[in-house]
Structure formats: structure tokens, C-alpha cells
Image (cartoon, rainbow, N blue to C red):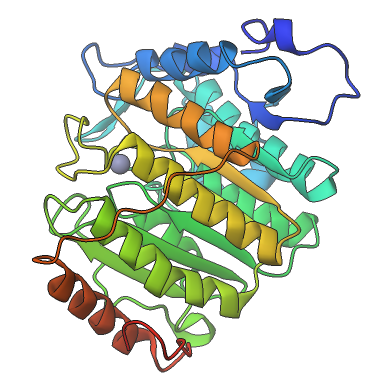
Length: 364
Ligand SMILES: [Zn+2]
């Protein structure tokens, strides 16, 4: 990545543009030929970002995450076990395998999320993207799962709390799959608010709307399971009418995004119908939350998305929005669909009304 983007990096003091952390070595994770989570995904995103106008992005270096940092989220025994598997081949679960290059790639993926998070917290740059693989949000504290080895966004959030003096971290997970690992890492805590939209009755099977957190974390897990075929209008309503009011009440001082693009209509696995414009609008909504509460500090960490061309388009659209571009307006639902969407949002609001107060206008 540093080499691919060298033409736009003219000096170490550049702080303008969107910070982008990535690394060629994440492409070395390729244990199963034909696997949908392929190196092509990474290369498509990197090559697309390299075509952006000079000044739009600022590449930053990343280092492999240290064992101590990974252990902020993962059990130390799991971290040590995984690091000891370096340079070996092993099937970790039915979907997840490692080979030579996989463990360094996973450490770099977490390291890229950390690098962007550290830089935007320290400033003066305020917006960043970690273009990474393997993805992270299914990785549990004690095991790999669903293509994920270490939970990149969770490690970044935990480090922001433990090491960077952030007090309230909002994680938005817009990947089509539920971020089970991230939820489980933080579901007993109020200092990290986890909000996820994902397809219902789909891998990994968690993320029911009734899962709202436990103990001190009760109310700080927000799940919006979406029906097959959900489109920009429905997803936009969830973000505008449910997640935005909760985020505004929470007032995060850092916003992180598990930015999968497998809810796109062109994705071969996801089954939802988001568009390029929908992701740009969604990124704009998240950017605006960060602007209102977090001094603009927002970082996207890539997750799933299995059509490389779609990934490339959506990542660059999001970077344009993070750089200050005007996102397209959300589409209004069709008259036929509007009542059902309003009722769906009302039902979700009722679940969370014990913790959060919603504005009286709109669905109630
Ligand atoms: Zn996914």
C-alpha cells in the first residue's frame, strides 16, 4: 500500500486528506484457493484508492499489533496460541483457515485499525480508513470465526479506551453479517456502544433485536436485524430514526465503523439491496455524528464484501464523503413500503426506550 500510494505521499508532515492505513502483506493470507475472502479484495481496494486525486488521502504506516494490545480484547491464551501458529496451515472452523502469511496479515489488520485510530485521536487529521483483511468482527475473545482471526475494530476500540483517553466509543457495524465478536467483547460495558445492522436469520445467527447488553452494558448494544432484500430506504430509516438518536444521546468521543460492503445489491453472498449511493449516504450520516460529538474523529475499518469491484467503488465513495464530499440524500420509501418501515422502526425503538429517549417527531 505504501508503495502503491507513494505518488500522493509527499512528506511526513502532510495531515490533510483522509488517513489510509493498509499493507501489501495482508495479501499473503491465502490459505484456501477460491475462498471468497481472497487477496483480490484487498488489491481492488488498494488500487482504487491509489487512483484518487492527490491530497484526497494520506497513507500512513502500520505495524503488526503487539500481543499485549490484542489481549485487550482476546484472551491471552488465544493470542499466544494464534501467534504460535505462524507459518503453519490449519483449518480453524468450517469457514476459516490459515496458511503461511495469515498470522502476520491478521496482526497487520489489527495494527492498521490501531494506527488510524491513534492518529485521528491524536490529531490533527480526524478521519481515516483502515483497508484490511482478514476481516475481524466475527472473531470472539477466545476463538477465530467466520474468516476472522483477530477482531480489528474491537482491538482499536479497546485501545482507544485503555491507552488513548477516549471515554465513549461508538462502533457502528454496517456489514451484512452480525458482528458477534465485537458485541461479545463489549456487551457488559457502557463505555463502548455497539450498533449493528445486519441480515436476519443469517450467519452467524446472533444479533436479535432483544440482545441489548448485560449488567452495566445493558442498553449499550443495539441490534437491527434486516429482512432479506432490505434496501437503502429501510436501512436509511433505521440509521436516521433509531441509531442516530441513540448516538446523539450517547455523545461518543470516537466513532469507529465495521465497514463491510456485503449488504450491497451486487454482493454474491449478502442478499440485501444497498447501493453505492446508500453507502455514501450512510458514511455521511456517520461522519456527521462524529462531527457533532467527537470533534470529527471517525475511522472506517473494512470487514466483508465479496465483489472486489463493488468494494473498490464503495470504499472510494466513502473516502470522498470523509474528505468532505456531499453525500446523496437518502431515498424516501415507496408509499407501499413506508407504513411497514415506520412500524419496524417503532418496534426497535420500544425495545430501547428503557435506556434511550427518542425525539417525539417521527416514529414513536
Ligand atoms: Zn460480512
